[in-house]
Length: 348
Image (cartoon, rainbow, N blue to C red):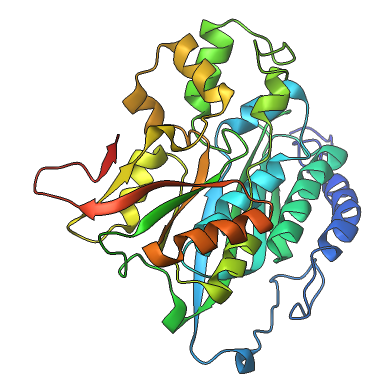
């Protein structure tokens, strides 16, 4: 047996780097704080005191998600300060569609080798996303896993909890034939469809990460790393004054797979293709990859990040409100009766 002493650091886990990282992110975490947060980071659990006096019958709503292979693009570009926004967006957008105000957020970062400065860039994005969503970053886990992940790669997962009054839960059950469908625009691909997008751009088109995208006026990295939009404050604003019967977050599966998740039995969504201008990135992917339209609409958001089902008599006022909130939104269709054997989403 050798007399050589080995340490955890020799095995690839640097506790000192972890401590440095925690010190770097403390101000980023503090920037997201809410009055209900009653402990700083560093404890075994995050503490959040829910003021039950504010609610009559509160229901907690939870969500978890990741960023998918968009992270591969971040690795290629060496840019890590926006994928955290994507992480928060994917989680909070999933609970706001049920009417829940996000309260707090936790993250999980796993990497082959912890680089404190790079990891702090990631958390900066998470902090920025939490500020946009109005929720507190109250904790997380950073796992250095040598031999499991490549040294310069990492994976992210996020977790959020929100609250909604039981009587105000949005679940689509009140959607009826004749409801209008309003689409709020996305910022681009958001965080879905990247495996197909990367195949088209890097394999079929043969572009490099910092190459210009033909006709788009942006590089590959600039376009693909555009952060996912966070719709929380917009939806909360609408809920104060309008009836919103259902909301679909357009993620993996696109319009064709996500809208049916909120439709009651016997209803279908009729979507008018020409009711909004599809962003050029989707047109480029379709043309360069020879992607069929049905595949495009069931993979990408195609320029629409949220779809709202609203009463016909309130649709115009809702569109005016959205414009006042600097949102680009369009009347993209309506709810119709679905006959047996028909698809739940019809593109016309």
